Image: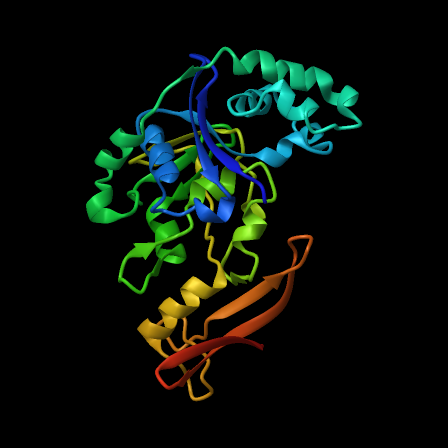
Length: 285
């Protein structure tokens, strides 16, 4: 069936959380998703810890990867003890204390729902995307992402002319094995895939102005085919049919990721038009 994720915003001081089932990662990690709208809306109100929590945390020994109390509290917003014991985990005794901690805290959260407020705030019917302005701050690490710059690098246009992108928040905050599914076919070479999951459970906030003591990091997440189709229609191809990435004459380059999420073969994308049908294929660089 595949791993189901939950978008979780939580305040450990007030014991308040907002949690939505976000389906499989690659189904609801986009700028047009209601789950993304809700998380962005909350982060523009105040700071929250964010976790795009996957169900696979409850299987095998995956819980052993999480040691911070802040992370265990995040997991407690969407999992309970029976999620761990019900999977017949042979090594449950090794981390049963964590599972019991998660279960006890699961019962203590005050749960809020901001879905409708978020859709109204960003005017979903008119924009189909959250607002990419200001800065996504990581208060835990004193880092920041320029949201406008992220969107410029990562967005693409659909066949209906709507701009969208894989959103920065789900990828940065996922618990594991979600991003590889979104990037299953490969990524544009500008993608910073190594950042996936590195902000999981950290205290985040979206603000208009960058604080002086925060470092901006480059961040870009692009899977190959949506961007390839967009570039083909916007910039065309060279004499060999290879797609341009912009108006500079540079070619659109992509790279495959292996089972271990490591880069392997670099390629160009070729577009061939026959009978008004477009066939896209990868070509070794």
